[in-house]
Image (cartoon, rainbow, N blue to C red):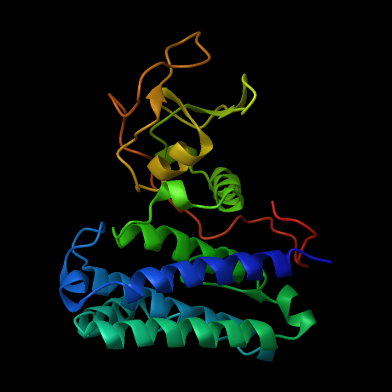
Length: 269
């Protein structure tokens, strides 16, 4: 048994939640701004539909061995999104549903050996095809928040939070960091807490927060609520957080860790 069934089940659930949110939005809702500067909610849904197509391209590459670019270019991707983001709600929803269904079919039809094939997105490094599922989960989970329609970081499943923090650390860019250390604090239901320390991240202050609050801030999906500066010599910081924080460091300096196992692992992370 590998991690593939668990990733597919998680993606199916996340996709169903996203499409349910999309189905609740009117023409006016979709023409309104999203959380992404310069993009409406219609832009976000259109991006998610084309993103599904782009990952089908990578799975086709894995299946056939013929290099198939994720997108023709960044410019072509942006132009298509801009040209079609203003469609009526029914068409935007149908496009998102169709893209998700076709991606699910491509996943279902991929031969077992092809999951280990190396593919590459718009930026290096190359990665095995099984990691396309992780990337699609990232797109669905983060951009669902960007719709600003009732789904937020508090709704991210725990496996999503754990996996994204794991990969964020493995792709960290110290030269672009705005913090020197991260302390992730887990509070146990029965009381007490545990801390995971990320030292040596670069220049800047130390910050602390729960894994979920930290991921929301590091991905730019919160203003830092629940994340606090950590005074020197202290293991925790009181207060609601968000005060005096630097800008979060650039997110996704790499689309995938560089040292992923070629074959789908039993668990990830």
